[in-house]
Image (cartoon, rainbow, N blue to C red; front, top):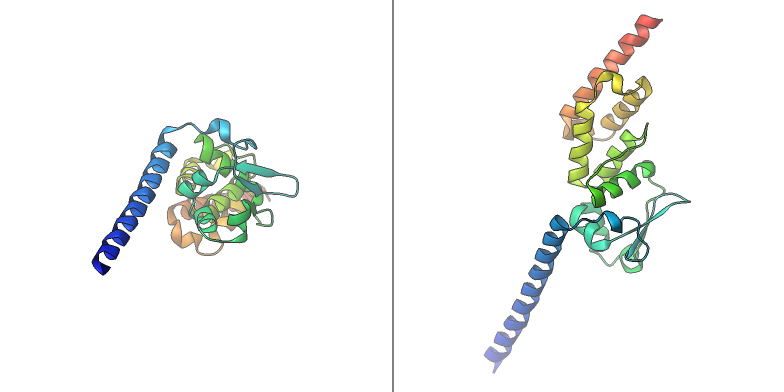
Length: 192
């Protein structure tokens, strides 16, 4: 009789594993096939509220956040207060202003970063561990010409790139920024 109990337990475990795998497969397939533009910041369909400033909250979707960002997967995959309440406060992060364009990219696959905010969006994407946004922003930085940004914007990007271990993790991007910083410094010296 203990063999029957083991067999029954194995069957239940198999069903749970298959159900879990099916959910992941469906989630992965949906995330690749469905256009989520209309769902961005939609309070009617959202199951997560993310505060990005004292005045601004975004209504987002847990399944999409978990699927695309490792940081949100860690938060919502746990039994944390945020996971249980469905509310996350990211407003105190020093790069909080960069979160909205990154979250919007998650839904639209279009990255629009307001002027002077590229460094904040880059830091936000890195924090969220959102690989597609990191790659998009880094490619954008690599494609920039010196004249595309003001001297202060290059300095701000440089400060972000050299913060922590980013220069080691992203050497090509850091080298591009550093080259433009040196050029900006050279221009400033020649004008004085």
